[in-house]
Amino acid sequence: MTGGQRPARPGRRALLISAAGLAAGAGAASAGWSLATSPSVAPDPAVIPPDDDLMREHGVLKRVLLCYREMTARIHAGGPLDARDLHDAALIIHDYIEGFHEGLEEGYVFPRLVHAGRLTSTVTTLLVQHARGRVITQYLLSQATAQGLASPPTRTRLAAAMQAFERMYEPHEAREDTVVFPAFRQIIPAAELTDLGQHFAALEHQQFGTNEFAAMVTRVAGIEQSLGIYDLTQFTPEVSQYTAPLG
Amino acid sequence: MRQGSAAEPGSVPAVPQRAGLALIAAAVIVLACGCGGSPSSASAAGAAGGTQPPRGRTVTVMARSLPGVGTVLVTSQGYALYVFANDDRRAVTCTGTCLGTWPPLMLPAGGTLTAGRGVKSMLLGSDPDPGVGRAVTYAGWPLYAYAGDVQPGQASGQGIDLNGGYWYVIRPSGQTLVSAP
Image 1: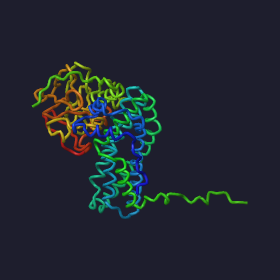
Image 2: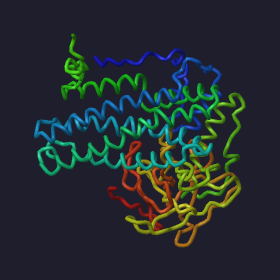
Image 3: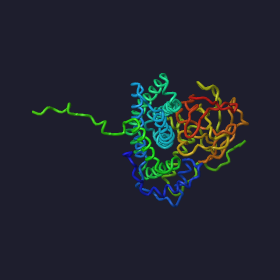
Image 4: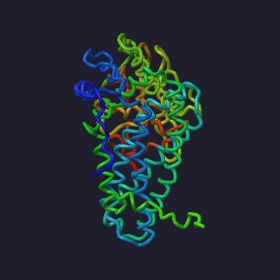
């Protein structure tokens, strides 16, 4: 259904069992220590590297941006839009991207780059954009109601907010994928990357439980289906007009 | 009220078994307490975490008027300090990835806590942080910086609903400023 089920992380089970034992109040640092000092957790060389994990989460973000684009087009065209779709799309951003993914970046990736004197100006911009995005999302969540969508001025503001969000996050995530994460990988020793990948997995489990990524993909796929943009074939262009005539 | 002087031992406990994770934890601590960050406009993450001096030093909570929110508590470097509604004046409940976005203002081991002008010293205290060390409190509220404030004098986290609850700046009186961003 989703077309994107996440493959199981080999060896992750033991890690998650250990992570589940973490106290609810354990912070990132203490979680790291718990994992580090747990004899039941062995290093897992097959764990998803942290930068790959973050880029995978960007895939969810990208799909929500595509939903925003479709919803914006519908508003501009005066078409129907289910408030539940908009609310759920914004909620995925709020909970998974802003409340989790960006916390990983702000807690683990950006500080290391800043400490290394790498991309400091870019990091500053990315942090500002995180903050601005959260304001937009809060607005979208507050107005994504049937009443809000019935109001022409509110519809216009919602469309503008989604457009602003999309315009900011497309270059934002592209820059992170192509510049920020590769720079991060350059400055982190390979062994530490493996540990960090395990730590990210533990944090994901702590916050969302098991199969969190697959659950998010399923949710966003449901919104796409509701909007009629799930079927990939509809995006395949007709190219006969671009082919050179024979003879 | 939870009064606190620096009672905890070292803020960076040794991790004897896995040096790699020790480094990772240290990185978190760097963000959480700003131990190693060089606060500047170019080091936003470090600046956001630029909330704790090295071990044994003094942590001063100041009051400053910031655009849009009026006079609120700030770090000695001028970064806005926030409270998390979910903490309910009891304890630090921001954990996990929340710490990356909202690094607590930490009181280092052997450190002292002082009130800047306009700040009531009797409202200052500290709580055990679930991560490391002690988090500075004011009127019982654990205090946090915000990663989105990349320069002193900003309060871009005011009224944000994130990581399970709302975040507000706090006045020297101990009242939180409950308003939307």
